[in-house]
Length: 308
Image (cartoon, rainbow, N blue to C red; front, side):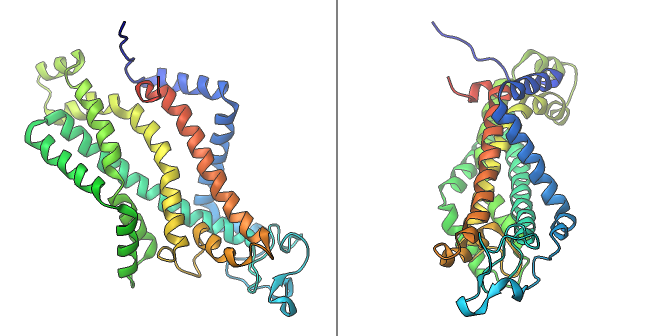
């Protein structure tokens, strides 16, 4: 016996289902709190970092031992009332300030790249699914072409060649360039199932033009899957930024980034494991929080994509 999949949830009903799902899943509630905290860090990093008493580029020579290769003084990598998360070896820069500003850089790139991906992918997917024909063919082949590129290799090459440019803007554009086909395919499939619904046909018969139909009828119908997909691609964007910075082609010093901090800490993982653990744990918890929240939202807003 075959069963028909439920359509994506819309409007106030979606909000009620999301709240119910968050109440049912303590892990999703905790993830939402972590995501909210990260969003606050992204916006208010210049106000939060000084709470520890140090800037991200201030050196504290008194916190390191010059006779031990600049290793932090004290336990756990120099954790103290003056340095809440310890300090960097050699430089003595405060890890709390570096992590907070690194969160702002990493998440700003990830959120901005995600916005580019969602806007471009949604527009391309709706156009391909609604208009069909030659438009669908051209956009679908462009999706296939973009997805066929070994994206990470091309990102590394493009970031290595470009030098005297704003690294944050360049990374955002490069990551966004290769990310839009995935969501475009999701939206295209959803649009194909919506464009012949009764309310869309009624709007068409009533004299509404394609632009009005796309904005008023189709877009609300694909909003649920788009929101769910967005929360699931943010972790990938964060990991991509961290990978590029780890490989040395992303954000450059002295601008802090979690991936850059992890790369620098590898040389000290045996003598100062705290330096390695702090940015690594931040990156892990961020990816985990977005993944758990995205799973919960997908189950509500995109039931057909949530598995059997």
